[in-house]
Image (cartoon, rainbow, N blue to C red; front, side):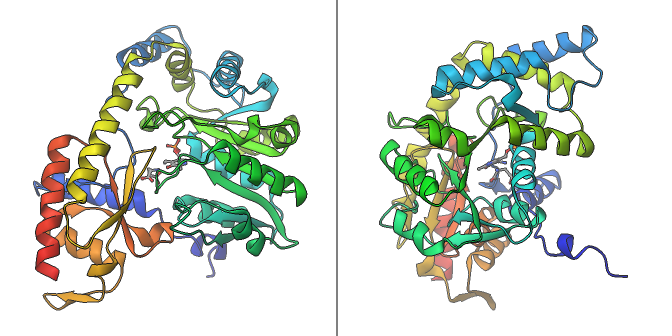
Length: 397
Ligand code: PMP
Ligand code: GLU
């Protein structure tokens, strides 16, 4: 029997698969160091946990409207106003099961078969798969190292056709950690206007930025950009709430209606308790968040310091998120104990087997000369893990 061709055409999430593999080995007693996880290692702050407990005791355990409760939507509108200088009404907000469902809803709401979505390389693993799931075509836009792997207008021009429907922007970026500045965003917004394209702006790492950098939402640049942008955000990364599964999206009322209607059949509302917890996350004290950001910045600096000491290795220096892309091209096309290391997947596999260090191969992000390391992990683990990578490098070359 021929099962779904569309489903068969999807690759499973490599980020989740490697994180699960590392955790499985750990549970078997193997001393694995994992740089895989795309999630804060901190627990959810106590005030948020208490808000969830209170919600349960208050009987907030029933269905809510499919797109989320009004009180949370209002809180999200205030967040957009205060943080991003963006005015939305609750009727423009949809609350979904993580940033992932927000993206899935957005692509399903805007794409017709064969519509193309421009995605910069490197990209977060789920974008192309979610576009395909919505019958669209992901079009990978090559970017350059010189421009820190960010789009330029000439990159976009080369990739645009009469089928192009939307441009995806992810700033701060997973996996590079680079940030688009206001003037770059303005050029992209002007380009989108000229070609009548929608913009999907994934801002899930907006608070995790370092070196005094500033986050700008492309939707806030002008009225036209506001109209054509779908902003994706969520509480997973900012409030160490990855397991609670809550993301939110702001868009025009027309697109919001479509997304809510899709969601009403697929999953209904996000877990009701998580919605009440998210109100507390967005309204509550910010000390925990500030401490977490400070700690990530220290870890990033330490990881860079350690990586820079490795032979023939270069990195993309991140200004945000919690990942570092490490160029391993000098170590490709080698063999180790009769295993060929021709690409980043081979490299990650042999590294895990030999030194018990889990990393994400760059191939999953469209940059096969790289591996991605997450620094959402302790200083001790960073120290041990990079030392092991150093030993591995000296063994394979
Ligand atoms: N966008 C990016 C760039 C991400 O790295 C993630 C991490 N999983 C998400 C969206 C979705 O996050 P979540 O579904 O956990 O909210
Ligand atoms: N976004 C994170 C990552 O890139 C979490 C895993 C996932 O959802 O893909 O590692």
